[in-house]
Length: 157
Image 1 (cartoon, rainbow, N blue to C red):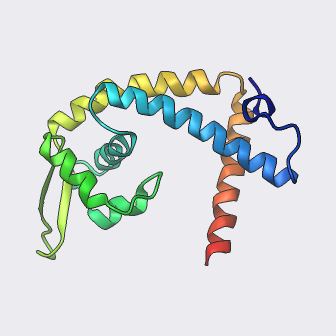
Image 2: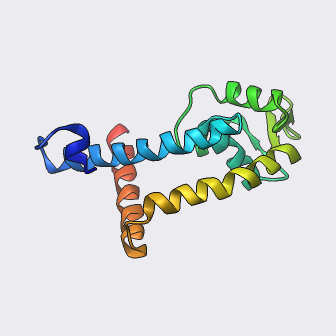
Image 3: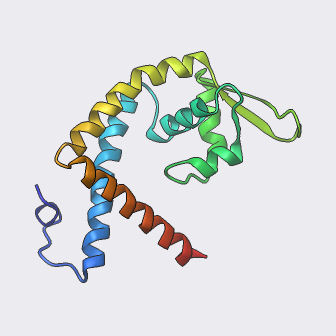
């Protein structure tokens, strides 16, 4: 189903509107499908993202502010995300070595095992969604999305 059929809209106000709505619909398609995979394993998509960030910093971990900065989708309450992940044993937090007021979150063995289970499923989903596009198209899409993010940051400043 194409975008016009999905939204039941034949024309957009501008090429920019059509392009950006298309990006939002495509992103939502992935978020919904990946969220369902995550839910099957008892985590949300945002929690999966936090675990991926902490795996990248393993074993040293990250402070809450650094996790917040790296999230794909900005979240106003990273503390609550970490609380939930800590409660189920996927993350542990300790006081920072340089600043005892700051806590550092680290992924646990249980969190790493969860990612080993989730990653192949998310990878298969990404491959399935991206299948209609050639590698060059995907690189172009990534470059274009990066340009959109950069222009948005300039606009918001």
